[in-house]
Length: 379
Image (cartoon, rainbow, N blue to C red; front, side):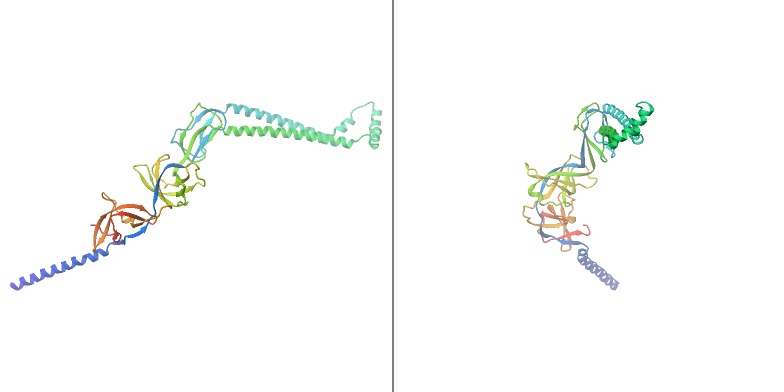
């Protein structure tokens, strides 16, 4: 019996020793399950936060081209229309009357041209000089004597030029035909001019978009150049901002910069530099720059936005940087997990600017020699 109790005690001691060894050896094994990176000291350039305005990808203002009274407006602000849809129509009663007059002028000019062609054909087939010679001038014998002897003799003696007269008669008929053809072309050009003016009575949507501003109502009188509607393509949006000249050198077309849009409490996105205007404003010394926003971003034209522009004129200071993926936003402050003696520990930090490589600056909370946990077991 005593032997059995001793054996049982030894078994318990052996089991306890094995469990203790396992517990002590778990720390290195646990440490190997963490993926860590070393916090490092690097330089992140300073940035400047500037305000901007959300604008449509493209926008046009449709203006009246002819004087008249507005008789149709397609819709209200926010209504969508396809390319080619009629948005505004101006009264065209006067132009329709002028068009009917132009059509009548074309018919008259066509009749004059047909008559000139008949006269020209008659001159070519039965010349007027022959008709003059065949005209009765007396009895049969005198007329025959005149045709056979008098006129040929006068031509041979140089007293008459039948060929010259024939040439002049043909050219006269050709000129009549050309004048009639010119009159027809003038009438047709007048009709085309009126048709162009009739097309200008209707203002069409140049692309798919929405009405963002309506400046006229049905019954308003307009003159050429009077704005009627602002039409915009809003499936894609942009931020337009006036950038100080000293900061423009830090921007390149196609680069991405952080942006915040005043929608739903503030939406942070990456905006792409789309256009840098080539000329600066001589009064404010700024350059207009447009930034493309991602498709589907909340908000609309006219909203306030902020963008962070790198400042190439300021010197970058040494800063502790860590991967942005290691930062946790759960809690009162941003936090990171660090590995200390094989165990995970939480440090609260205050963050600064981020760079284009996915790193973020740490203003306070780290010394710069910590092992930052990027992934691994929680707890």
